[in-house]
Amino acid sequence: MNLDDMQAFVAAVEAGSVGRAALRLNLTQPAVSRRIQRLEEALDIVLLDRDSKPARPTPAGEAAYRRCVAVLRATAALERDARGGIAAGPLRVGVTLALSESVFAPAVEAVRKRCPEVALRLTAERSAALRKQLHEGLLDAAIVVSRLDRPLADPSAIALGTERVLVVAAEDSGLAPRVKVRDLAGAAWVINPEGCGFRAQLEHALAESGLGLNVIVESWGVAMQLALVSAGVGLGLIPERLLKDSPYRGRVRALAVQDLAPALAIWLVKAGELGPLEDAVEVVAETVRRHLAAPSDDVRAATVQTPAQAGRRGAEKQRRSKPTGKKPPAAKS
Image (cartoon, rainbow, N blue to C red):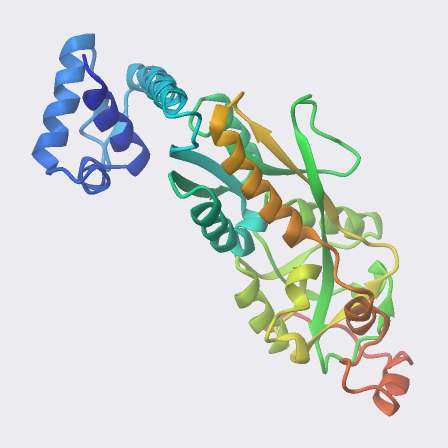
């Protein structure tokens, strides 16, 4: 049994196939296969279910994977200590789907700049799945969400901020700038799939008013959602920080829904002490903090307190300050 064999097996599990593991390790596929077979012989167990496509770890392989990761991480820590504690090696961080679209690129750039020896590997998933992967040793750290009134029980969890979303409609939707949930009866929605905390809060608010959620499009991806909202397909729930910089900002407007203010707390959780890699984790956390920073007051005023965009005040502002009586966009048959 040797470290190279363990590394090949771990790479195959994380990459999802022996072929992709070979690319990651800059080896041939037969060479990776031989290393995995050698580890299987040393442990006298079958590590991969080769009948499944792609190959997946067997139950024994899953346990062995966690052990191999621990061994490789301990070895990397020993090497870092010998070099004076310089952060280096792979760092596996999961990010909740609600933030991944805007956090991935700046996080990678920041880690490359400040911790160039760290190989950051990011994955996007729902928070529950990320916490499970963290517990199973598949991740080193994760950015997850929780309800504001239900902070994480993990005493080591670090609060990074709050993510808030706005109800947005097409600029010409005819809806009043300030409404209540009951005014959205029959509205069509372009929204995240089930499992999204913001969607759950919207569904709860609608249910309290005796209304249901009429979903026309459910998909992750703020850019696509805003494109559909701007075309009048339906209403959307968009993070405030993304709306202010969106190219669709001139074609959509935020509604002030007096009895609905969806928000989630954002947390950093870790598998344990990560040694010198803590610096790289903090770089990721700081990236998230910056992106959660609240928009400036002038942006908030332009998107919430007035229905028109910042450059179209005056008569347009006065016209939109009065309810029109028009109904929100409904589903098209």
